[in-house]
Image (cartoon, rainbow, N blue to C red; front, top):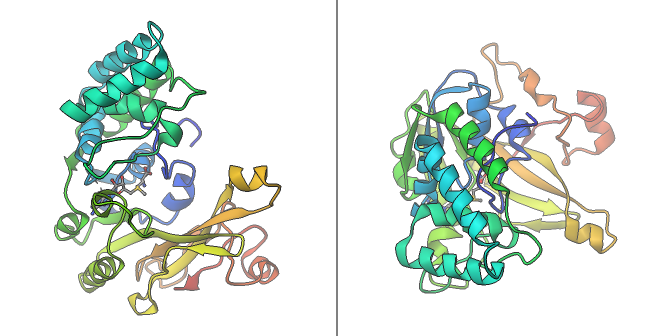
Length: 321
Ligand SMILES: C[S@@+](CC[C@H](N)C(=O)[O-])C[C@H]1O[C@@H](n2cnc3c(N)ncnc32)[C@H](O)[C@@H]1O
């Protein structure tokens, strides 16, 4: 939906793909679990559509998970705090102000300061140095979301989720181990690229083989899930794909044109793979669900014309992973 609240600026947020992803969710979810929540874009969008009774928002990054909890449980306080910090930047050199807030955040780990840093830093992109200190630079051209907009986003997210969410900051495996049969898990793990620094294995990379083993375990328990994993831009693929033996259905979502490619005059669209757990694509009669049809999604493993012929113009075709 157009006005879905989105308080946290976060690189890699699924806010723009949320509608396409939610299309594949079943209708009978007890608890929607996001083990790699980030900005919790999927939980917020799902709550707006009342897709689950309860939600479990987890992210290993504790200040981030604490921040999400504050947004949901104490919205007025955090909106007021943001307004105060945001306004202060106009009383002094705004870059100096950012560095002061960043230093204070690294000392105290106050999640409220993190909200401002994420709104003001380059591309909402979380970067830590080898000592685990947040070291992303400020965006010199922007001052961050205006307080009134931030307030509306915070209050909106809280209204959708208050009283329905459990929060935690655990490793994803601990979360998966507690999932039940009527739950549904949406997983958007960090990019699988090679880690350069010591802390990135905690916050920006997971082990591919461990992850596959965790998915196998979910399959054996018949727990339903969707994973956002690899992708490609033009002919260039990024990330490893998930193996056939997991018996997943892979769909490619059109994530739009990258601004970088546009600047370079290249007409390249990014596609993100979405893997659906076994059984998710079938309704009770065993037939493919209507939800295959989605205008945002393009099937790429079939030639476009074939896909259009089979599924209708601008629609998606499922492929075995
Ligand atoms: C790609 S982001 C998720 C973005 C999210 N889907 C959104 O819409 O904002 C991946 C997240 O996983 C978290 N993370 C990294 N390693 C983790 C782990 N082992 N267990 C749980 N969360 C982890 C990171 O802190 C990061 O916020």
